[in-house]
Image (cartoon, rainbow over all chains, first blue to last red):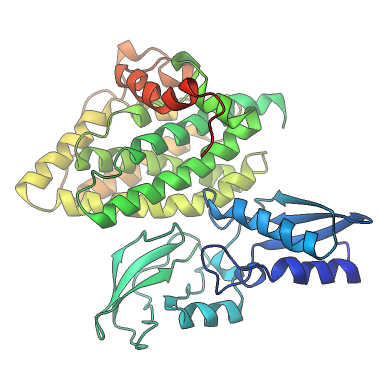
Length: 165
Length: 238
């Protein structure tokens, strides 16, 4: 394991503070998609980014945004490389990220079962509006690939749930 | 990438690309808005897989838009027309079960496709879950939905045998894959009060079928539509 230099740590903070293009309340660091920042020479940096879903169209915007942020920080040569392994999981979303999602009206993902596959639907998802755990699934797929659509039985509000992956 | 990987990446990449396009045809036609969104999301996952796999072989756009029909290596199952919603669900059930088992085995290995398989297998679990829920709902629903779901399963049955023909460079236990598929699909159909179709899982006419570049008639029309824009306006961008 190569240790991160002070400069790499600083650049990681810059790249990590870029907001997610589809969920701007989250930063890329909180989403857990920023894997590493390597400095290869003066002004030459490579960033490793992992997609949430294989088909996630946001990854291209994320790359451009990271490049812009690092250019503004004085790094002229930035390349963003997509890495698949180890696969991203909703467990990579930080505690702060989960708190922000709930505040934004999106139920955060539940912790993953250890045997893989979809989380059993018996585990309750809390309504981000009224806090009730009496909620029901409307559709496993919602406005983006990473979300499911649910409805709160108590307050009747529909809401997005960041589904477990 | 090693050259030996190309046939594998092409076969699996074409499966994902072609099914993605077929599912995309539902946009604006699905029975309810939630299904419109669900099918588009599944299509998007598949397109993501296709882009990664085809990029291992060459330029993704050239491969998708400029190959002739006989150069595609996808299963004939995925190119079959959508039919009614039940037939699309039958195709989803057959294919997502296959893909889940295939990627599961690849992810457990240490081959070059393992990272993608480990990523995609988690997404495919949702596709399979979606297909199984709808199979149960339609099969164990009204007389009309039951009849249509059974017809969808029967119609596509003869395209299922091809899934278990070994693909060059795909290092999985094909017999285990087929046994797992039969058990899984059989259990879902039984719970849905449907009958596992009888008859051969492939026809003599199908020869080596899609994996050898032989496709069914509807595929020609499908790729004509898929490739039309790129061929008419080379290099066009949004």
